Length: 155
Image (cartoon, rainbow, N blue to C red; front, side):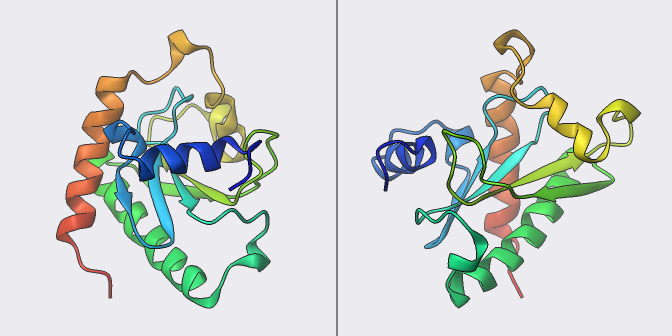
């Protein structure tokens, strides 16, 4: 954990049992699944490395293996719970407060306006608070995703 990393602080909050449902959807030994807190798009999930690493090449073999399985399972869960056409999966770890490896798993809905498709979907992140998905909706999605992840097996 690094003192400047907001991602590490959020992991510590989850470890302490102080995170709301939307910020504590599902946890494994290596990864946390949470709903993005600053998005206008319901179901925008984030798969977060529980260990502070700054680049993919720092993953262990087991972390990498579990990552692949979780990307698939979370994408399936989003398709089931939101009805999305597919998911976008993106990783940068470039934001000053989030230099920690994490993956955005974004539901691509049929009605997503063309101006937000592909990488332009990031126009729906970092929006003013009034435009963000409300906590009730994030918790509802979190509960549904958690249920799917708990009741499906990973091959």
